[in-house]
Image (cartoon, rainbow, N blue to C red; front, side, top):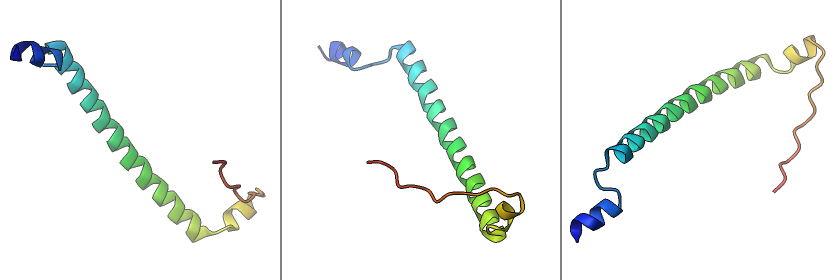
Length: 71
């Protein structure tokens, strides 16, 4: 009975284990990408704050204020 229950909840099926490993690796890859993008975004925000609106004014872009998101 214990073997049947273990098999039912995902015991040692090699396909299931391989899929779980693949998904865990994908989650790790996505987390790494998120950290990279967040640090890149922080650097861009710091550069934008340092230069202020002068950069946007110099190239003639009018940036409207962001509107609140709908909830």
